[in-house]
Image 1: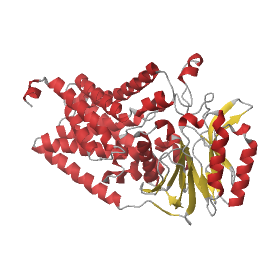
Image 2: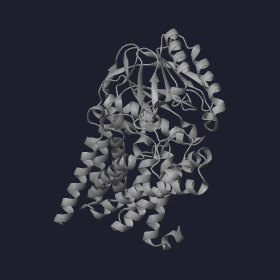
Image 3: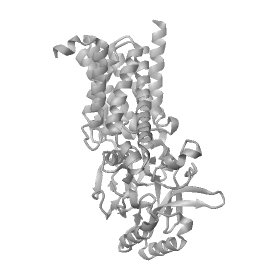
Image 4: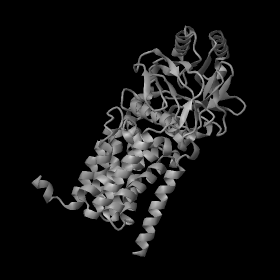
Length: 498
């Protein structure tokens, strides 16, 4: 401790910021220690009580530590599973970490540059507003990367009650207000402590009132659903010699599922474009008719006239339907690089030419006349993008191929995001993945049932359709963003007047 006191304040602030950032991923799955996030953030807000440039550096260090510790699994995806050359894999991971850290450097700069008249104001309003606004921006700028958004780590905590009101960013804002209030109570003058205590009381009261509020209601009878997990290893998934065995496996696992209303296969469960397996698709349609079910399968669609591939969901029962993925994965489904480098940068998730984005105005799929809001893979990380299907849709459905994450924390983080989507919309979500985590999630974001990862199996359960609309379904992220912008604008005006 004596040595720490001999370190300069700037170095000490950066050190604490880095340690707090490294601890932040512990608040997310699979660790799920949600209380760590407000403590980590309170330390960061304390470190931001510095000149603007220094606060930016501390924000960058915090972000670099957090994303290096929380998204290291990208190396597994890119290098060990995707086969990307080592230098490129390291460069991509380092580039992403630095880009995400840059957003938090911006938050630190804004919080220090427009610092308000008191610690309570800065910690309880300005810092939470800048953090939340920056988190929202990094969730969509340059296609977005919403991983490690603060609110996801609170899915099992009381602050999750804010999700139906303003989505994951409302939970983020509430968590940041809690962090700032704790900081002001501990370190502020008596007036700061009084204001922070009032903010804490308001936050607790609001959280309690929202926790007992319901926004949606059951609609009709529960659907009997079966989610098929083939557990095909990623390194085998696209080998030509394994295609027939994969298709036979899924068919055999499905043929005995009688009495089900909905059967769902994972993303790209059929590892062949639809134009190459018309007979197999006819057999599946016949199987769905015999079982009296709606069978939804992941497959690559090919448009011969336009020479375009799409990542799709096919509904092969009655009524038939199709959904094409709209939010594509950079370097996984499209390659924002010159054509001559694509052959050696390509990951093996979908080994085809660039996937074409699906249209924005697609209709919901249906099972037993129940409208379904579909998403494919990490589309469920973008809550606002599924709102076009709501409130018409009564049930959320997601298919994923998390095999390229390997046995890391990423599939657990991905499931956490899916749980947030269910809570935001007040609807059940059924989630079928290739290797796990396949799950049925209720309208409160609680996992009702799962099956083990990396093992073939079928998860059968009931999923209750829900009708109605939460405030988030009606307004999306706009109210939270507007509140953050207003706080920052008021702070700027006060700063200029001073």
